[in-house]
Amino acid sequence: MNTQTTSWRLLDRLRRDGTGLRLNDLFANDPARFEKYALQVENILFDYSKNLVTDDIMAGLFDLAREVDVEGWRDRMFSGDRINVTEDRPVLHVALRNISARPILVDGIDVMEQVSEELDKMKRLTDAVRSGKWRGYSGKPITDVVNIGIGGSNLGPQMVTEALQKYSDNRIRVHYVSNVDGVQIAQVLRPLNPEQVLFVISSKTFTTRETLTNAETARNWLLASSFEETALEKHFIAVTANRNNALKFGLPQENIHDLWDWVGGRFSLWSAIGLPIALSLGFEHFESLLGGAYAMDRHFEMAPMEQNAPVIQALIGIWNSTFLGMQSQAILPYNQSLHMFSAYLQQADMESNGKSVDWDGNDVPYSTGSIIWGQLGINGQHAFYQYLHQGKNIVPADFIGAVESSTSVRGHHEYLMANFIAQTQALMTGIDETQVRAELRAKGKSEAYINNLVSHKIHQGNRPTNTILMERIDPHTLGALIALYEHKIFVQGIIWKVCSFDQWGVELGKELAHRILPQLDQNGTVEPQDSSTTGLIDFYKNVRKKS
Ligand SMILES: O=P(O)(O)OC[C@H]1O[C@](O)(CO)[C@@H](O)[C@@H]1O
Image (cartoon, rainbow, N blue to C red):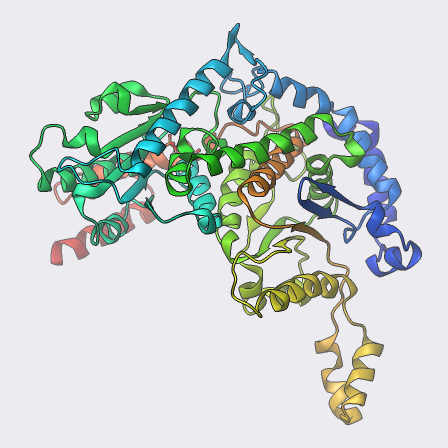
C-alpha cells in the first residue's frame, strides 16, 4: 500500500504540522514564489503558486512519485505494456498522436502501422466530404454531419469542435446526439435535409443501447426519404472496435473506421472518434491538435519531475484531496470556447479515478479521485462563487484562460481576464476583519452598522487554485491542454494505485435497466424487488395507462 512508503508518512506529518499555513504569508516570505512555482510548456503557463505547499511539501510529493515509480509506469504506458490490469490491455492513446511514428509494439506488432492507415482513411473521408466529392443518394453534397455517440464517443469530439469553432470554415455543420431521450434527435433532425446528411455512429463497443437506439432512428429517418438501396452507405459511417456489429447494422466494410481495444473511450478523441472534429475544421487542424498532444507527451516523457507539468498538477491534486481532505475540484474556464471543458473532464477524470479498490482488489484507505465540476468561470461568479469564497468546504479550482481573445469583438476580453486574475487573488488573500472595518468606515458607515455586518463580509481566503493561462486557444495548444489533463489523471491513478482505465462501476446500472425495461411494458410482469423500485414502476405504468 502506498501509505506505507516513507514519503507518504512524511507528507502526513507535514500535513499535521502545516495546518496553519497561510498563502498570504507564503507569498510575503518569498517574493520569488511565482517564479519557483510556475512553468511554461508549449504556449501554456501553469501557475501552481497559489496552493498550500512549501518546498518541503513539494519535495515530499516528488519523493512519493519516485517511490511509487511514476516514471516507470509512464514508460510502461508509452511502450505498450498491459497496464490496464483488469482488462488485460495496453493503454495507448499516446500512439494515436505519436507523430514521430516511433514503433510501439503490442504482442510484437507495431500498432503505428494501423494508426497511420486509419489516419489516411480519415483524411480521405474528410477531404471527400469537405470538397463535395462525397455525395448523398440524390447526388447532392453533404452539408451536415450528425455524430451519434455517448460518453467518450461524444464529449471529447463535441468539446473540441466547440472550442475550435473559430477554425471552422462552416462548410460542414456538425451536430451531436448522445441522449436516448428522443427529444434530442428529433430536434437535431428537424431542420436537416436527409439528402445532405452524413451520420457518424461512434461507439467503441457498438453495443451501447443509447447509441444504437439513436442510430436506428436515424436510419429510419433516412430510409423514409429514400428507397435507394445505396442510401445507407452514402449517409452512414461507423467508428468502432467491433466491426461485426457495424456490419450487422448494414454498413459496408469501407464505411467502418477502426478503433482498438487499447484506446479507452474517454481518451479516444485522437482516433477516428475525432472524425467530426476533422470534418468540421479540416484535416490539417486535426493534425495540429494531435501535434499539440504529442508535444505534451514528449514533455511528460522527458521533463524531470520537478519541471513536469502533468506530474506537478497531479501531485498538487493529491495533496489537496487525499492529504488536506478537499474532495471536489472546480474547473473554471474563462473562455467561451471552453464551455464544455468541465463536462469533458468529468468523464475523463471521474470515470478514471473514481475507484475504491487498488490494483490487487484491496480497499484503499484514502480518498481517491475528485468530484470534478464547474462551468464558465464568469457565469459561475454570478452563481456559485459565493460558496467558493465563503462556503464551509474548501474547493480547489483550476482557472483556465487565454491571453488572446478568440474573437475580433473589442472591449470584452480585458474585462473577462481582469476577473480571471482577480478571482484567484481574492480566493487567496481573502479580506480580514480589520480591512472590512476600515473599508466600511471609509464609506462613512456607522459603528453599529459595521458591527452587524463585519462577520458576513470577512473572506477567510487561503483557498488553493491553479492558473492555466494559454497564449491562445488554437488546435495545437488545445491538444496540449487536453493531454496535460490526461497525464495528470494517469499520475494520480498510479499514486492512488487504482486502475484508471476500466469503468466497471457503470455496468450494474446498465444491467438493471435491461431488467427494468420489460417491466415498464403494460403487459410486463413486475418482478419481486424492493418496494421503492416496484412503487416507481407502478406509478410510471399507471400514469402511462391514463395518457
Ligand atoms: O463508445 P461506446 O462503446 O458506445 O461507449 C460509450 C461510453 O460508455 C462507457 O463505456 C460508460 O458506460 C464509457 O466509458 C464510454 O465512453
